[in-house]
Length: 253
Image (cartoon, rainbow, N blue to C red; front, side, top):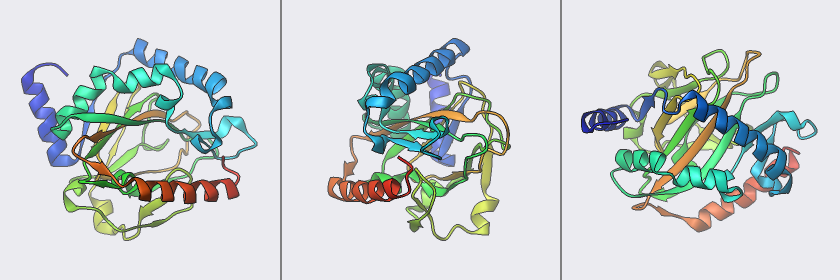
């Protein structure tokens, strides 16, 4: 993303749609490096981090890991990545402010086990005031409608926070309670190739279908908060305690 004119068009598209698609944000070599580092993380780091930050579809089957949370807190490679200028400057451009790197997650939809991701707004989980944050979603595989690409409700970030309710989907415990046909009609399914980057606003409504293919569906997520936003830490802690108990009772962590 070079040049002031390109930066301006990216910002305008983000403001209008609530998301922006940046093809080939990382090149082939960079994607391969990320895949290797994630494999290392699973092998060397996962065995020693808190169970609450590892989500399984089936706990007794290690190859069904569906989500790794807060990777930047446990490993220097991923800490350096989330704090790197390449991603930080993009977040600052889109939010019109300085930012803090909050969370890095690995997302997976294991073949034969995955479930649909319910429609939701990331900002519901963040509990910020004002709700100014972005999620970056970097494809590590070819991701299409068949294996669960992201679906955005275009322009929904301009309509405020919607009502959410409990779901039974691990990692996405809250989903929009009144998702309607008119929402579905505005959906845009965004296919991506390895290295492509999607960035969406924290109020953007989005969802994804299950992986119905035999292909892998892996992505890396990076979350940035505007430094103008204040987190309700008490609410976050209460929510996390409740969530951890529920997930443990389901034997998913």
